[in-house]
Structure formats: structure tokens, C-alpha cells
Image 1 (tube, one colour):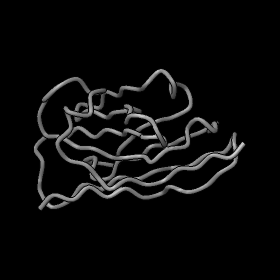
Image 2 (cartoon, helix red, strand yellow):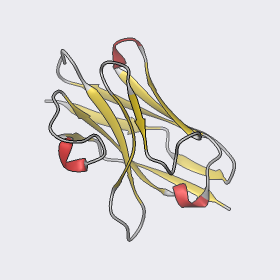
Image 3 (cartoon, helix red, strand yellow):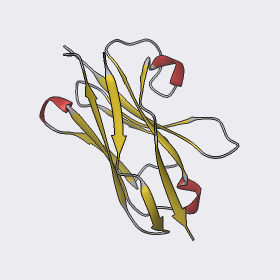
Length: 124
């Protein structure tokens, strides 16, 4: 059974940094894309960033220049480095994975595998 597990959330003051990690296990993927989404209280889940198996990255406009997505060799672990955090970045952050293109990277319906989420709280 495939498991998607996020870690690294926490509380930080505005301007600070956090690094989230995502590990996908339970199956060998010949190709795998990994994405990060977030959901703030009272809001819909939104796309944050994605790392395609080719190495291509995508970012939401709200995080460009502040967040960076990367993976270790083989992308067994994917990281989301978050710098210059703002209060509006406060949300539960979810990692998602897929092994085929099922939609645009910024659409959550395009990602069949999800983690439980990790809370990020940024205080001003």
C-alpha cells in the first residue's frame, strides 16, 4: 500500500523559514510527480508547487521566489523549502503524488495519492 507522509511543519515568525519533507513509500514508481498543496482555514485547497519526474518545477504565483521544491536522488524524498514566510502562508500543507498525467499540476483532482498534511503556522 502506498503511503505519503509529510513532516517538518511547525510554528515560525513572519520572515522565517521552514522545510517540509514528503516521503512516498510502498511501491516502486517508474516515474513519479510530487506536488504540494495547502489549505487555510475556511478556504479551498490550493496548489503550491510541483516537481515533475523530469526535474521540471512549477510554482503558484503566491510563492514564487520564496519557496523551492526539490528532491533527493530518485526523488524518494521531496522537500519544500519555504523562506520569507508570511502570515498568509499559514495552512495545512499536503503532499501529493501521481505516476501518470491525469490533469494539470495545479488541479488537486489530478493527484490520486495524498498525505495527511502538516500544519504550518506563521505569526506576524
